[in-house]
Image (cartoon, rainbow, N blue to C red; front, side, top):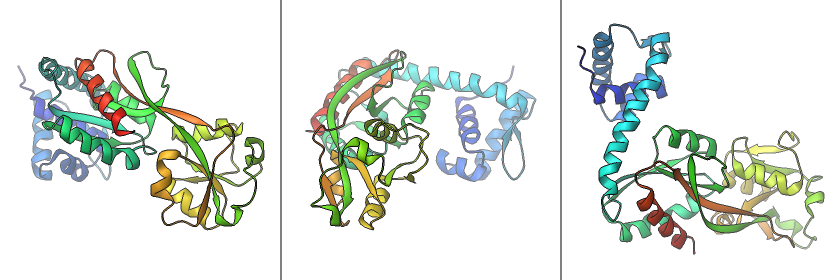
Length: 292
C-alpha cells in the first residue's frame, strides 16, 4: 500500500497553483531541491507522473484528476483542526483573512491593531485580491473568511453586514467651483475606473447607469493610480469614502459629494459549514468596531 503524506499533498497543491518549482518552494518555505524530491517521491508512490516538466510545469491528465481529490483531503484535514479550535471560546492560532483591494489599505491597519488587543494569540494571514477569487479560495478552504462588498448572493456563504459607506467624486483641482455632475453627466466625461474583476468598478458603473461592457474608460489597477491620473488632468473617478484621506494626500484633486450619494455595504463572509462560525462572528464584530 502506498504511503502518501499530507506534506506531499500540500506541496503538490502549491506546485499545481504556481506551476514553477522556484515560486512554489518560496511559498512553501522549503528549498527547491527538497520540494522536487517530495514531488518525485509522491509520483513514485502513485506510479504515475503528476506534472509535465518543461519551461512551464503542467499537470498531466492524471494530475488533473488527482488535484481536486487531494485538495478535498487537505480541506477536510483543515476542518478537523477547525473543529478543535471551535471548542474554544475565543479564536486562537491561524486565521486566513481575505480582503478586497478597495478596503485592504484603509481598514487593515486598524483591524490588525484591534485584533492584536482582543485576540493576542491570533496568527493572522492576509490575502488581498478581488471578490471572485476570494470566494473561490474560500470554497476550496484556502481562506477562512473575507471582507468584501455585499451582497455576494452565494447560498454556501454566511453574509454579515458591517458598515455602509458612500462613494465620492474625485476631479481635477481646476474643477473645484464647477457644479457636481449628475450620474447622467458622468457618462459624457472621461471616467477612470478599476480594471475588470473589481466589484467597485461594477458599483460605479451601476451608479452612472453604464453597462459593464462600456469601453470608453481608462482602467487602473489601484485607486491610487486613478487618483494620480485625475490629478494630472486626465479625467474623473469615484472612490470610497474610506480611501479619501490616504489617496488624496499627494494629488492635486478636488473631492465632491453627490446630492444622492451612491453607497456600498461592506461585510464579512464565511462558509456556512465552517466549524468556526461562532468565533468568526466575534471577529466580524471586531472588524465593525475598527471601521468606526
